[in-house]
Image 1 (cartoon, helix red, strand yellow):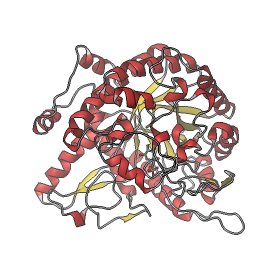
Image 2 (tube, protein in one colour; image 1 turned 90 degrees about the horizontal axis):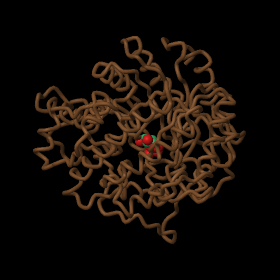
Image 3 (cartoon, protein in one colour; image 1 turned 90 degrees about the vertical axis):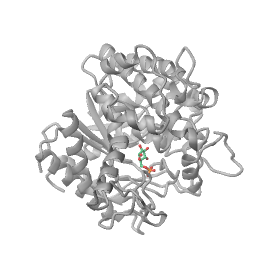
Length: 475
Ligand code: BG6
């Protein structure tokens, strides 16, 4: 296996999925706090018209408690250190720093919490990799301003970013701006913090929201370089190579067009600092007209990212005229069922070769350092009578994906790190379940609310420790 000497091995999480303590330390409510657990969440995420109200009689809200990382971070970080993590990906919950999002002064208690977390990581020699916005827009900004559709959010975001860069300038070197920014056209609720007014307005509102995020991200890159010399600020894409279902040129063309919109558009703006020419036709055909203010395009040009990070869970297979029966059940980003691939218990198609393809596509297009900051298998785990958790299926999944990364490095890709998703079990983003587990560390917490929150090492914990210790040699 060919991993560079300083390869950044680690794990990834997001504040809203693990911290809990949703009203402690002066934190305000955010998007994840009003998303119920269970199947209903997925429906809300994909439909127009969600009202962002909580209904505790009807639903439960697992993100309120998460896995209580807020109080247990020392124990958890010690476990990451035991595995040999070089890096830990986490996010800052914006509403811990600015509870409503539009205040002028930050909340000191929130800032102090992340100081403690970063100090603890450094104590163990672990580098933090911080996502600035990971599906947790302050609820007030959603309700009062309509989320990222509203230009005002650029200003609020800039204030938030200035505060955290100044505060953590000696503690955090690696930053990511918007988690899975390109997922917005499929699920604006998550990344852009609004529910489309109607199906007809979905695209117009989403691309306008994306434009605001491009401006905000470019500003963040500039500020980061100014305030934290030597910092590395990356973008974050959900990347799914798009295969044509067969060699019918119509399907190949269709797959290519879908890939451009989904995989390339946001990356091109972030990395090249320009709107790509192919988007003009798409905007025209879909009646999208962006409100771009003076200076926006210059800012976007000046604030290009230092590296590209991606989440990789699945590929996508496309066909121009698909029937409802052909549509892949669990593929949240669309496409038809790929007859060559098996799927997880949630219907997510498993395709390690697709990761090699993804890395080659991205590096071929941009020649910028890449980091895989999410990848993993959501699965049901069983605790045996002796307390062990033998998650061989997870080891197999991760092994195959790590091999694919090593092949990509052999292919010439500049890959600098890997943080697998949900290194400790946490609340699933799309389904709000605890039962969909990704971790090397088991957390005793269940969808009916029961559980002691006790942490337990799974078989994969010991396996990943060896992978890191051998720099990917021992798989
Ligand atoms: C990514 C998100 O899309 O996928 C994470 O950035 C999320 O927040 C991860 O948890 C896995 O998805 P899920 O729905 O299985 O939790």
